Image (cartoon, rainbow, N blue to C red; front, side, top):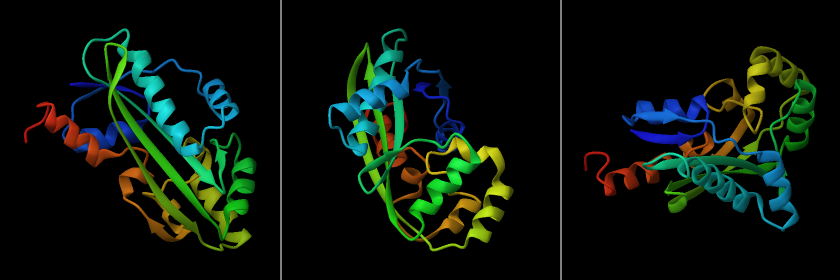
Length: 195
């Protein structure tokens, strides 16, 4: 069993469905403060995803034996880091801003043992938001409800959110917030899964 320093149900589901036994632990990291610090240091959204994944993995691995994986995902729109919207109205504004444009999702996973990082993977996906109508957006947000606020991009790509896009480059696991294939390869290399 591996330890996942994340409470993301999507990540737990991805790992469980891939045959990985997981124990999920809340990492106890103030992400907002960490992001502000990293932004003030001039870190890019891609670098921030990696740094936050490491911070979570290291934090939990200082108190738990074994292999701990921390994960994070950031949304990069024209070099600007976007956080999860707090309200449906904020999300509507964010999606209207991205309408017709391209953004990147950066997903990172870092393994740590004994309070030190031992492995990492970082992948990115490029998503072009289609030029949807305001009426479609209102209907989309109504159908999705508050649950969609749990996603950094304000969409659940594996569901109705797929309709937001007319072009996507990158694997679905990256879009869902976990570089799953590299992680599975690492688990096999470590002898924690059958090769």
